[in-house]
Image 1 (cartoon, one colour):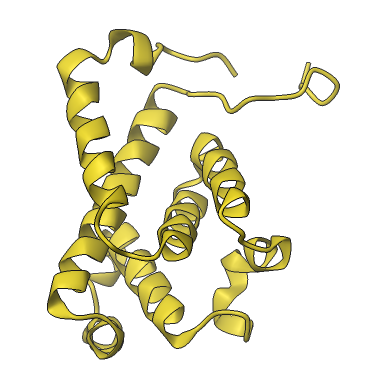
Image 2 (cartoon, rainbow, N blue to C red; image 1 turned 180 degrees about the vertical axis):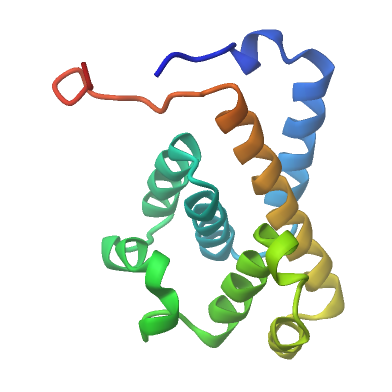
Length: 153
């Protein structure tokens, strides 16, 4: 796979706007572990290898366990996630796949049971932002770092 362009080299004001939005998300007050789980899950759904690589590394750096990262794709079948995390992950899936799900009432009710209205807005911004980053990375074929001994030919 070959990158189409280097977003960080040519992104200009558009990239600055995205980076400013990312800074806002990081300062939202949502738990860092939750932020990384949401970013990783949305990136899994979207098939964004660049972002999965980045956010699983970031999650581990913030103390996330390998086991929870491995099981994230099957979070509904695992007892390793809190009720609050489950609500966030359900909302992440609903909004990442919004053309299919139309953000069902059941997912919103679960969200409302575990997040204040202000937190709901912050979480929705987080989900929107990672979906935008996924589209930049996938669209421009961003390639995650690869060790030379494991690089594909």
